[in-house]
Image 1 (cartoon, rainbow, N blue to C red):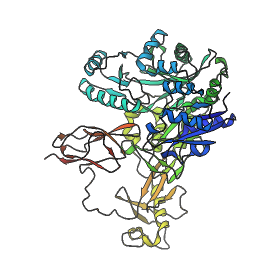
Image 2: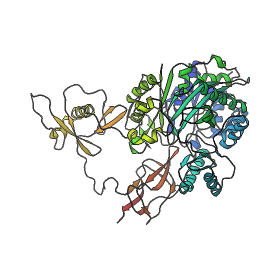
Image 3: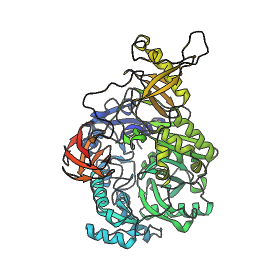
Image 4: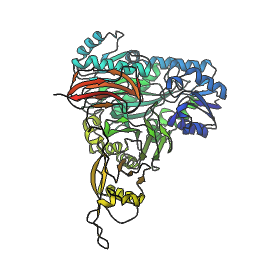
Length: 629
């Protein structure tokens, strides 16, 4: 019997678990780092205990601090959420050793499935088909390169201990293997403390299919059908759905049965996800679906399964952890309609999806769909944690209905000055091939230029911006260079044919000036800009021409700056080196991912200002280039 639940996590997943815990009559305990002291999950819990400084290793990953928080608060159970310590068998053992209830699978199951190479060997024994590749112990770069040649390019490098796309690289040719291997190992070591990798054949048109499984301590294992998570960017899921499009009853039965066998092979208890890769070049076929890995925890995308089955998976977790049998037998679990989830990230798609951090001065999410979020207006996006700030989940009777509903919801997102991928998500959901169910893991990459770039502001946006600028500072507007001085075609007592010169990203645009009330989607920014929201995008305008700054060069002037706070993990060039446009110069690690900063043109390295291991702030100059003579 659980009475007081501590959630060893943060943000939206902590809030989501608390919601179910309260419904079940449990007391709740939050933990937090210094960066999260004012976060919503801290305020919503019955108790909150500080773990330590902002860095995850000193707070959320500090096992001793989490256990002490449980003791001090009187908690008798710990739920790890996902990420952080959720798949750490040593942590699970420490929780159980302290006499607490562990809301998760047995440590033995975590260990069995935690290393991808060992897990695949186990799956072969259990009769579960696995992806062809190299899963051996020899990690010498030359041996791995030889194995890659034997498998045949392209190959996929994957971290043995990882997930979430971290420590993963696709390699097209032998000449790129060494660099990709080094990057994958660095990222894996930083994320998981283990730099070992495995190699897999790269499937030309892969689909990412995963099955939600659940086991109890009475020997029962069931599945709650499949999810499709094929829409990915850099191997990170962007949009997930349940069920999978194009999945026949026969293939579903085969894949779900394989997932159940996988869970049974490790005496699984609790919530887990068995992930498969499918070769979709000829549609989904049972003999072209292979086991990839098992995530021994609740998944980020669990809400879509909840939507189509009508079950609360967190409640299942808590009941199973308390020793109860599974709430339903396999034949009692049914599918109803279609559900989709979109991950709202604090990032700028138009700038290469670089994370965006800072205060959420304006933060409005739709109320037409389920929204799971860990932040609120007035809060901030920290550089210390994952940039996902919300999940939007829509359910409908059909796939098209769910997609259209979610597209509309993404278009209603309003966030400023932090940038988000809301417009990008809306464009993905409205893309004709996506609506037809023609998806694979390369879907976004093949269309990235079109999907990532914000469309030009519509006439309605320009008109709203003009109204907003004129409404916020009439006196300033009359000054030389102000908006009123740029009015053209303006006549009193005549048909409204005036236009106003505005500035966006330093470029002048003419905006029609029309009579009428100020649009509800206009934000009058404190810095003097007018921000107009449309279809998930935020368009910022100024009424003043940008002033020239002494010594400031044009875009692409060769100054390479840090786009966010982070740690320098690689410096690929030195002073005097000749570089080509697009060549990686410095690699920065921030928000749990590596970001390659590249040369804007062919040139010569004038200087490098940082070294490996340096912690840098946003805006710091990392290197300087000069054009080739």
